[in-house]
Length: 271
Image (cartoon, rainbow, N blue to C red):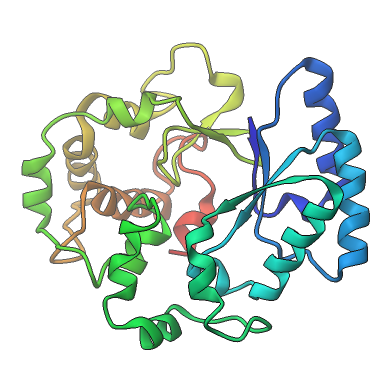
């Protein structure tokens, strides 16, 4: 498994406990993800990383991208990388190719995507998915909306007549959030209570998920139309995930569906 966040390094005692438990039960921790926001100085970073290494930390995935540089100065990222190397902890840079881009701007500051576009050209943001694997859901829907081809809701429905079984049942890479919810596939804003895993779940418990599983985007579109007289709020959409997110946001606003399946609620209140 891997441990992500949020930022797990902000709670080092709890992270230590997780690492200890994983070691006790024989679960390998491939890496701990960090955005480097916690870095203050080299000495304190080395001290913390040494403590965590003793608990089983072997590899840090360090986030390196223009998206993170909007919030985290490059100087912090470099500080974490240097401290890790001095403590014998391996670095998994995600992704190293962006280091040269970030190095073109002041390392002590945070820089907007607009600054990168001004520096590298108007197609810089548009071309990022060619360099950085990005799932066009969640925040990426807003970030890449100006650059991607769009379709009407009717086109999206026509091109996606099937169900979402493949996405919802893919457990090759999945997450458990800090509230104990299982996130199916990469579907941000969808959840299954951990205690409901490994057993059948029905339409009473998970009406939205069950409909997506059986009928896909057309299913919840019809559900929203029949229940709330829903009409698409936008003229065009990037893909079915874009349309699905809009419909699910409507459901949350009307307290529709099971409390177990549309989480965290903040996902829908902070688009």
